[in-house]
Image (cartoon, rainbow, N blue to C red):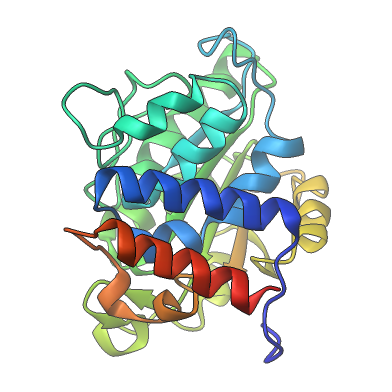
Length: 275
């Protein structure tokens, strides 16, 4: 990514305002990993995925699995934005009287699979993509995962099989924010060269700035990157992007007992940074 400060456009800032409002209602949530995801999910739901919010189980829909389920705050904001459920439901995030918990759950309209324990999303996506191939369906499968998640062995077992079957209807999207809950990815368990690893496992790979909306749109428009191979898009992102106190700060991986004043301070910091 460029060393230049990230400038977020009006839609990205508005989505973050909604996220902060949701966080304020619950007083807790995975802040950093949700903010690094926002532009990836925004581009997918604004113009890439085929879906019908009125018919969330429509058979012809594309599948989108948020394998890094702890980033679900961003997913719920996008699903509400698109009308899968009323925006008022965000006010009950992580409450017993609501449907939105701390990780994705298929009882939520628009959510395809339970995710939380890392390394499960790609095996699920592999099965969905293989089923589509065998059934002669045109649906595509997108699996959004974290870079720290790529430390899981199940990821690479699934990658091997995706390449074996030439699943060009499968796209892995890696939110590569270089941080995980215990610190920098390269200190916990080094992964680089990440793109070369996916290439070696049989994927056609591209890398992109994960906050550059036009670049993301261009990359997704080029899918599949190779007609006979699964695709991997490595998105270089900033954990906590858009809110200075949370950026690249492991202390903001997950926050609990946030009060209204703290949430207001985060919003103020964002507005000041992007004025």
